[in-house]
Image (cartoon, rainbow, N blue to C red; front, side, top):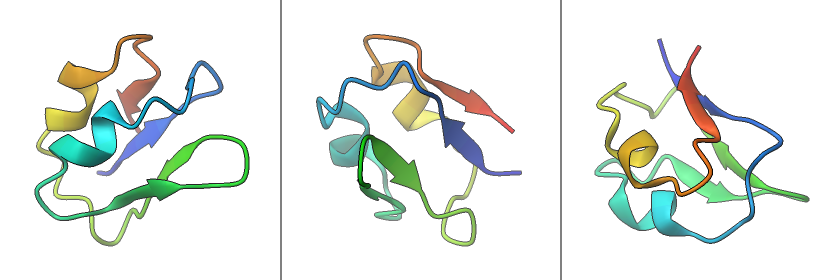
Length: 56
């Protein structure tokens, strides 16, 4: 199961830098996670200052 980024995202980029599979990119209004590339490691969630990332 992939992680998802909620509306609490402030587009700081901390999650993108932590992703080992480069599954995170800037979307229109917030960062998004490519579910096909996500390996569910949780590294992004640990770095998120607003706790916007959760397991789906």
